[in-house]
Structures are given as C-alpha cells and as structure tokens.
Amino acid sequence: MSYAAVVAAEGLLVTGVYGTGKSSLVAQIADLLEERGVPYGAIDLDWLAWFDVGGDEAARRDVYLRNVRAVVGNELRAGVRRVVLAGSVRGTAEVDDLEAATGIRLRVVRLEVHLAEIERRLRDDPTTGRAEDARAAARWLKEGIGSDVGDLVISNEGDIVELARRVIDWLGW
Image 1 (cartoon, rainbow, N blue to C red):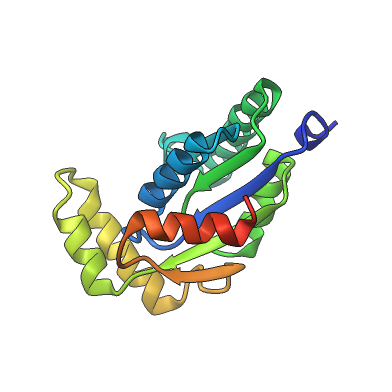
Image 2 (cartoon, one colour; image 1 turned 45 degrees about the vertical axis):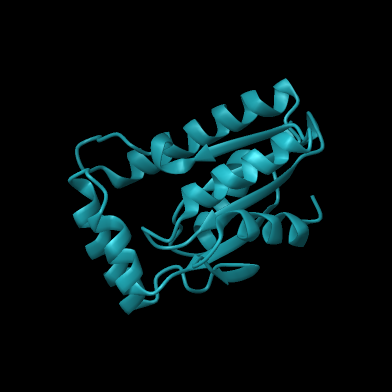
C-alpha cells in the first residue's frame, strides 16, 4: 500500500540549482500553511542525503530514497496533507523517483536566479561547502542540468512572502 492511500495528500517539490532559495521558499510556504491551519510537512531533501558511503552512488541514492520514504510516510501517518520538499534534481527521472518514494504526485516549481546573484548568496554563507555549491550551480546552468524540470518556473528575486503566496495560489492550497 502506498502512503498516498493512508491519507489524501498533495505534494510540491521546489527545485533549482544551488543558491536559488529553495529552502527559504519552502520555509516561507510552511509558515503560510501553518498560519492557515493546513496540516503540512516541509522537508529539505539535502539533509536526507547528507552522508557518505565511500563513493558508491547507487547505495547513496538507495539510502536517500529510503530516508525520503520513511520521513514522508511518518508525516502522512500523522495527518500531514501537504508535503513540501526542497531539493535540486537533475531531471524528470529524479522527480519520478521522489514520487515513487513518497507515494504522492509532486507538482514542481523550479526557481531561477542569475548566476551573479547565486554566487553572491553563496559567498555570504559561512560554511565551506558553499564554494563547491557555487561551482556546481555554474556547471548546472552551463550544461542545462535540471532545466527540463518544472511545472512552474519562476524567478526568485524579490519578496519571498509574495513568492510563497504566488506558489500557494498556483497550487490552489
């Protein structure tokens, strides 16, 4: 039985290259859903994939998707009705994997931001890994990685509250 059979839930994946503001947008959407009394779960997928298994990408992907399945499943069993995920995906196959792991059809918003702004955002972050994220963002943009994903593509420059409201309105939530 899929988790979707446990409760009728809807899902959103906010994606984009590193530094586009996925986590910030998801946090703001969560705040608005909470204000409206909507049972929600907000998950930054980076945390579910933040481990090292010695370079075995297949094992890493398997554990990551099992983490997603477990966390979302727990939330659904607790009564969550809106699942909001933040994470970079390389293409539609990764969205399909997330839908299979969650048991929920995901609508996808892809954020876009100019590379100069991404570099500024990541440069101001005190963690050392963000320099690598900036290089990865530049590569993804140059190679078009993830550019085929997104039911809605929007620029994340401006007021985050207004952007979150726009996404919630688009979803009909």
